[in-house]
Image (cartoon, rainbow, N blue to C red; front, side, top):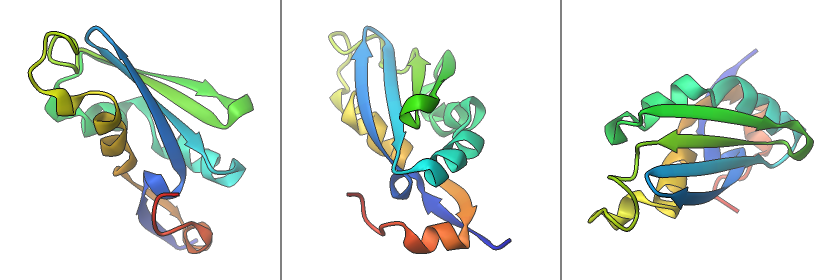
Length: 119
């Protein structure tokens, strides 16, 4: 099977939230085939590595199969918390956009039917 690398935004959209020094970032797959890729490619280890520049103390993935989604909880990534940090770009949507830029391997047939730009 031929595979290609694509950014996550071609497979899913995202929502975020933050509380204190914790950010949670959800990935919601466009469909079941995209969700299968998320399960194998968007792992705790890969997300922790992708956000390594933010130095998370822990990354936990919660899988929500009924919604074809997952939620990542990243601890220690908000410079002490939204109200304490001077760097506002590191919060909320900024982190979700960063996650959606992570490139993952997908079957070429799947990539051919996915949108080229975020919906």
